[in-house]
Length: 134
Image 1 (spheres, rainbow, N blue to C red):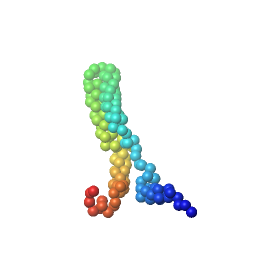
Image 2: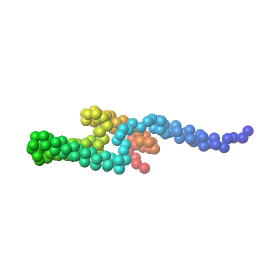
Image 3: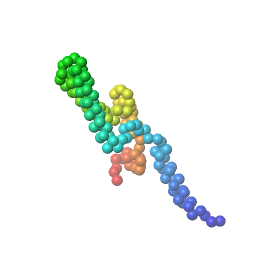
Image 4: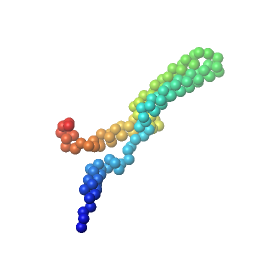
């Protein structure tokens, strides 16, 4: 009647899984906001260039049609710049995942509230409540 030499390790693994709990089983609720820093930087640069170019292009065509050469191109150039800045702010704040700014803000607030409700892993609850840092 030999004992299994791997029994203590199996017992330890099952206890670790029980301690980690639902954090490993629960899918992460993350949208497109989990981009890498390089990807996000490239996206911001492209959004700025494209919005300014589209604004200047629209102004150029309106100027050609109305025969008012620099007026509309300058106006739409600034409008494209403003649109680019607004898009960059949405990207940085993480509000670009849903259609409509109001809906995106509500979804982000709900995600943030969910994150605050989750206990931090790796630290006991009692120490977090006491405010004791290790």
